[in-house]
Image (cartoon, rainbow, N blue to C red; front, top):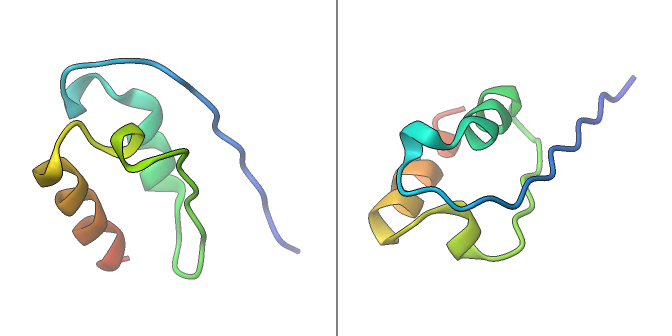
Length: 60
């Protein structure tokens, strides 16, 4: 059986330390899961944040 979890938040924070919902979503993801974000700027504050998150996802 497939398990679905929807996490929907729209908040503004300055750094990854304060992004609790994003951390939770990234920890929940498993291989073959799909992460949908409204736009790349919602995923990371800058290019380096986005690259780091994508690299973490690729390691799963």
